[in-house]
Image (cartoon, rainbow, N blue to C red; front, side, top):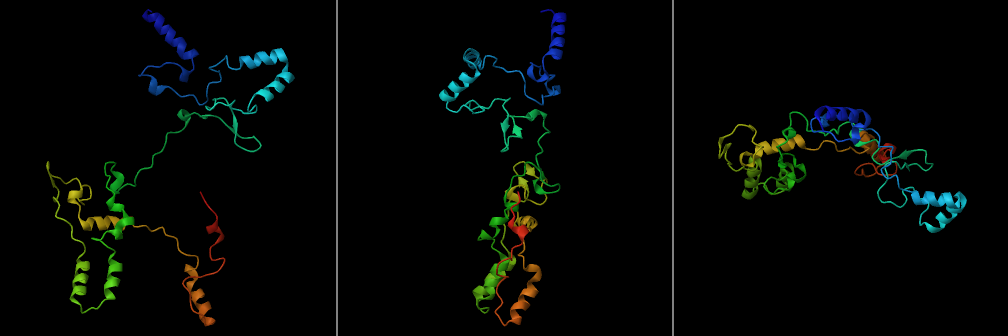
Length: 264
């Protein structure tokens, strides 16, 4: 095919053939608009020819009677096909007023997917920072080398204070866990200053920097009980009746209605 004839053929193809159903070159692919709807022309024009032939020869009433006798599920909108046809409208409400179609609207016509990223200024803003320990708050107190200092201090206060072992334990707890020297930012390629806080590489991580990162990631979204804002009234109610004050406010109705409704 000569160049002028080929150019005319391509021009006609662009105007006649739909944009999303013709072959395109790599150069023009980024500029092709995807169709927002599936093709309305069937790709299987022969589908249903036998049914049409029987209906034409037997009549609609007799054909329908035979069809309902022979077919396993005559009212199946998918015609017992596992793969849904693009033009099949599937009812999604009991009355059938609202329907849905396979891949409609097409994914290419939708807005681009928004992938949430980390907050600006955090360690995980860097996509290559994959360390988990700076915000692994769930296992913070499970490490025997770095236990919960407040709980350990309470335990030591219950022990004999004149015992040398207790005094040694309190001193050790006050000093905190001692980190290994690490490499102090010196790697095989030489000194590195890409991470001044030392959490990027485990060989330069310190316990102080880790605890600081864990403090910043400690959960603060725990809900308070319903009686928290009126605990003085709860205590006063029991004291007026010379009753022992329980932990919290017991009884029906302590959970507000809004707390019993599931929200998704």
